[in-house]
Length: 226
Image (tube, rainbow, N blue to C red; front, side, top):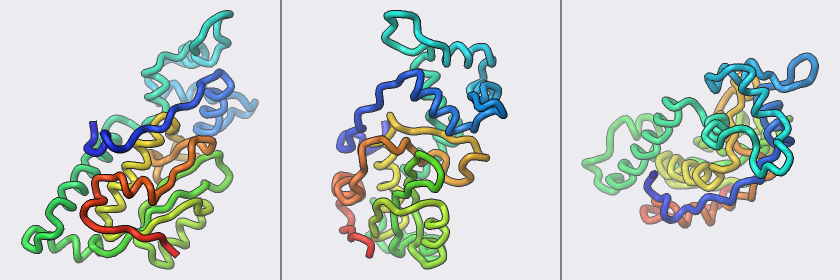
């Protein structure tokens, strides 16, 4: 369990229905020429047969309270590959360690200054253009970086934080809160930040409130972006 899990409470997840599962897979993988779920693409990602995916998408038996898809398989479809998720967790823990030592000048790595990681960064939540998704992103806040972000989606909320490390911890907190609503689009459906996305009908995220509860809060204040 990630540090901070005891203060960031995940939002209650959606009610999974056949309609919602089908819509998620259509959005994340794209439809076939006939407009149906690309079961071959889903099967390849999940490491199962196409017949298994078709069973997941079949109508539940009368009186059944759950979908045919096992919960662990549903979670697998919502997440990135294990190595990517592991790398994200390592990045988060590195950010926490950096914040723990950032006030000690002797512990500051020269590379942090060189890369501008000790400068203010912006955490933004965007509504991805043309998709029923929300995404959290970390940016330096320069005109060029914000312009690129705006090309990807409309800003829903944003917050300026003291360093890149604060931003990484806050972005992690966002995904922890939204974990039950996560999705993982195929690369041809979303080119960047594929493990930082969730369904648009999820509960909204208040970045300022979340930052106040995050482990990074104790090191420095945050301020709203203009």
